[in-house]
Image (cartoon, rainbow, N blue to C red; front, side):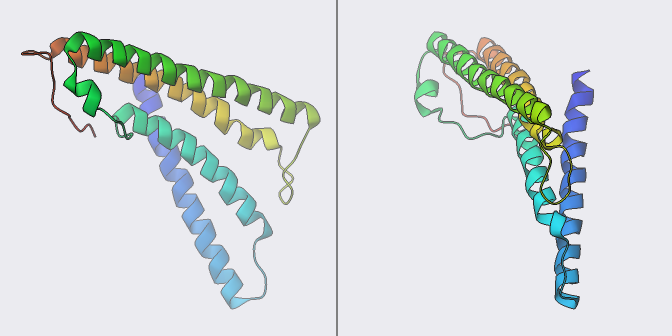
Length: 168
């Protein structure tokens, strides 16, 4: 199941990015050749950018590509590294769980008020779903990253210290 989610995140981001690039390019060409432009394009591009940001953050978390400060943690004995990994997992998961709860409230408010986008007239909650969906994926990815970190620490031998390893 998670393998499907992994691929869905990547393909959805790629498709949205391709669509955004084509739409922006087309809008520039139309504006250059005529005096008109696609009024809806800016609104759609901004909303799709939010989706790509949330899905991209989840992909980055899954691949271990997010920036982290591990100098102090890596200098500590293994048992303290495990404590830091757990604290990091709890804090990250808690942050995205709060964002998930806020996003659900936001989408519910947009749905109840029947808000629509200014130029396209589409329901705002369609685009607002990016926050709770992305946050739910990020909670899952933070837990996955924490478990992977703990497993890596359990496998590391020697003096309990480990090298900084880039994951991609």
